[in-house]
Image 1 (spheres, rainbow, N blue to C red):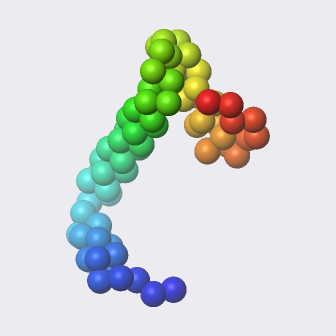
Image 2: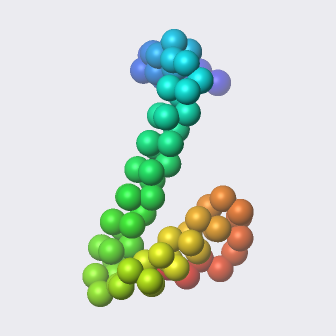
Length: 73
């Protein structure tokens, strides 16, 4: 596997960070992932209410992280 120059720079940057700094970056990325998924669901379902949105997010997270079938949202 070959890495691009950009990927090598990113890895070098991460190596210089402390474990707590890397954890914070990971947390921010996960939060951003949730926000993008919420925005996508709202875009596809403009009339969705907060309860339905949370249920759809839960289903998507199960599908992504637990590899469950039945993605309906």
